[in-house]
Image (tube, rainbow, N blue to C red; front, top):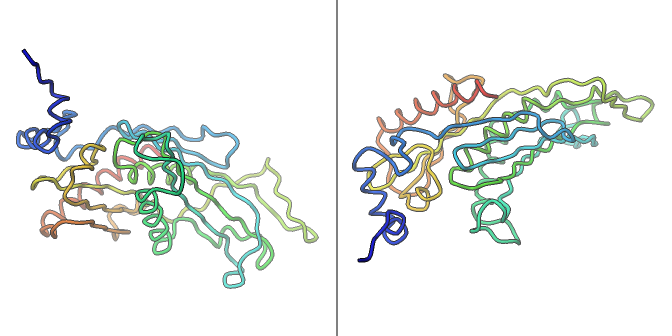
Length: 270
């Protein structure tokens, strides 16, 4: 007699497999539709960096490393430093990524973060100026996905906020056209916003929070709500929807409330 296992059904008929769970108000990993996965955070584990944060969201993990260099300010903004974020999804995080140019998903995530930073700056760039027109800090925040089991964006934004709040810069001074930055004197970065993303997907009329990779592969559409962890009840930093039909107003309000509640929980960790 041939025995059909649950994993076989999931592989052969993934949509039907997921649908049967959701119709019962539960997901394959035993979460309810509105539940997010557990988050764990390790701050400052990379001692060669100015700051770092390792985030594990379920089986998805992202490491953000912050490093700073001294540069010459731009002509357009002589009194400001620069902040440069980047997201990398290397082959080691998932078999679906191959060596070579950045994948479509990596490019989409990078574009989202760059656009968010342009519209809602995270770091006080003027605080990065050492000497107007002569020297300033450029802060690099590199987010690397170590394990991809869905919803990399949310994990990456937690790691970014954590690493920036953990980062310290030497108190640099310009002395006779030479910049001195003694490592024994440091100060925290001046953070003006803490963007925390909450991603939801729609599948067969159901809305799921914090999707796994299997759930994301089957989604009809996705909605990402970005809340400022330093001003949770304030204006949203972003709301991005991809694909599908428009959500109802009461559905959007519910997603915003869930995003605010999650941001409050995350801020207690970073």
